[in-house]
Image 1 (tube, rainbow, N blue to C red):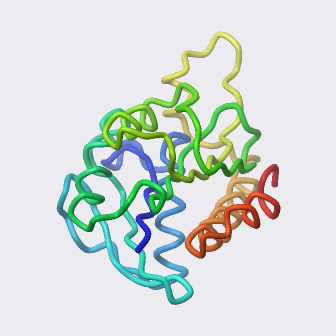
Image 2 (cartoon, rainbow, N blue to C red; image 1 turned 90 degrees about the vertical axis):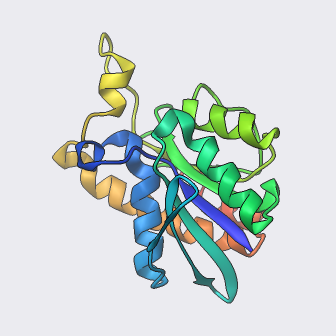
Image 3 (cartoon, rainbow, N blue to C red; image 1 turned 90 degrees about the horizontal axis):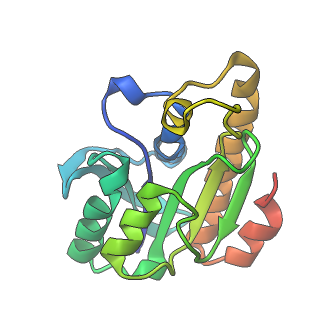
Length: 187
């Protein structure tokens, strides 16, 4: 069983913001594989289903970004899912809009949601799919930037990025990390 986590912030206020790309990817996976996000428990909204024959849980933590680890660790403990079977999808300001970077493990790279997950899981050894949201403009506050919405000219690139992220996650579910990296890193 794999736990696929999309990071974001709950409530309509944050819908469509750069910081919520993880939620967007989870919604796309749920649509693609007809997985209902219908359980509210463990400080998150989640659903159980299958991707290419593999059982998965899709999770959107409802704790706000900086406390994402509370929900991730609770679901992982309840379903006895090891960290290496947890796939986390989140935003990255160091990548161009819609670009992906897939890794099997690594540091938080300054991302507070990932920092909190690492703290709760006591390891940084879990696969992740970083989705580029573009670099913040000079002199703009980082929090204001990641909580801003995409410009019209960025939306098409983001849709391509979301589609690629869904395909990359499907490969990660099959333990095809190298294939996912080869196919989608930098795309």
